[in-house]
Amino acid sequence: MSQVDEAIFAAGCFWGVEDRFRQLPGVIEVISGYTGGHIDHPEYRQVCSGETGHAEAVLIRFEPERIDYANLLQAFFTMHDPTTPNRQGPDVGTQYRSAIFYRDQAQREVAEHVLAEHQKSLSHPVVTEITPAATFWPAEDYHQRYLEKRRAGAL
Image 1 (spheres, one colour):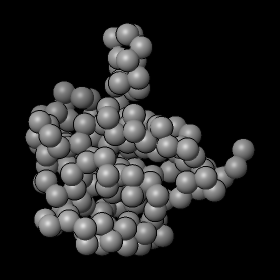
Image 2 (image 1 turned 180 degrees about the vertical axis):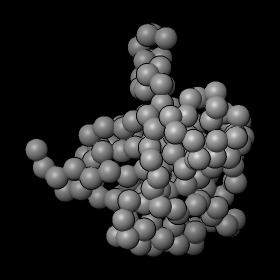
Image 3 (image 1 turned 45 degrees about the vertical axis):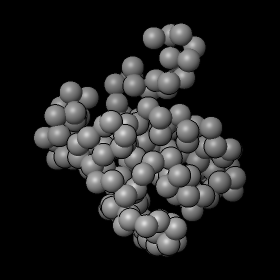
């Protein structure tokens, strides 16, 4: 197997974000979960309360030779509205914020560059946070591949 890297993004409800990233060539795995908060092992109801500080996020494992981090970021910016603070569609709260959780300085620099380029095409300011990655807590099993299971009639 070739080299595998990881990226963590928050772009609203993780169900749709997970599903869209999963479809990109070079993406090996996408896990829905929580990050950026102040308690260990958060559960969905706790995160939804807005009191844990976590964002609904996705952890993406990808092959950089097939899709690089910049291309993942470009996809990230097209799958949600990065100009709405703490909101995506009908979902409102800090857990739905737009955020990039970088794992190292190289990811940070690429994220800052792609965000600046994306900002040029928008009339409103981008509110996406660029912040160091914290512990990523996988969401409960029923959240994993949620839309895929729903399409298959498994829910």
